[in-house]
Image (tube, rainbow, N blue to C red; front, side, top):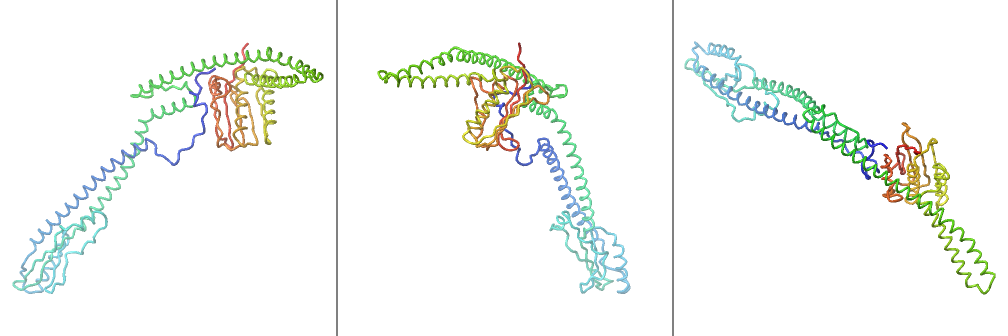
Length: 471
């Protein structure tokens, strides 16, 4: 019997199909990646917003300084011979102010109409920076400076804050930073995901090894040198897995001995009942019949006839009970008919005893092998218990029993399927004898799964390694 492929524990021998998890779930490494990238992105966004606010204040300071400087430099009197000469000088002055940033100068006539302007007003830019900038109440208001042509009032210069060009540049710079920030975020996310994946690779190996052990591959081990700084984790896992494998092996050996002792005891008791008690009971039957007939022929013993008939009935009941005990202790058909014949007779009896029409199919595909007695008995009991369970706890109309050798040729693949409603059907917690079927399967190095079938109904699936009878 092997020791590295068993399923640990009796509860794991009967494993219902797992339900898939509802909805998509983020993996741990993706969560860690999102957390790290999110934190760094929040930090970069905060820095970017701070720079945005600082750019707004810088632009405000530049506009104030430019407004004050231009206001102070604008002349309050023009030395011109006449009004036309003064307007020409004003026009020349406006042309010279056309390259000013942040500020726009207008010349207004005495009636307040704008006659000259240093340049056209810049359109107000869109975007967050523009909204923050133009929502400020600190932008300089219009400043008016009257101008004379000699001693005659000519009009006035109006100095207006016009930060549109600066805000447009700042907005473009901010958009470039946002694009760069997006690119950095993508690259950073990829690097963090790669780093987290590498850091969690040992945990993935541990999870895979645990999954293998869950499937019964107790010989699974981790290569400690591949874990780097986590080498102690791999060594601890290997020690735990080794101890678990040894414990399961010892348990199997103990179960194997117990099953062997139980089967020996069962056969011994069955042999005594069959060879010693049954002949005596059968031999008593003719004598009881003779006594009953004598009492019937002699009127003087008519009262004794009733006792003789009761004795005959009790004797028949005792014989039937003895046959039931022989069946429970050890199926006599296994020795007389072999495994295939015994299973065929079992299914025939179950079909005849059914209160409704029941179809039972047997597909026996085992080659002619001298199987160990414990293996033959376990196969017979699993089929017997599965058919009985389907018969009692479902409304099935068909039962299919399939017994074959697996693809590797090293184990028996046993399936008992019925087309009844799977609701309410369970595999029995205990089987025949002191040791249940689960423990028998474990001792043989196999496993049993019970649950809804792939095509509906209920299926019991046993995988039992082949062990031949030794002589």
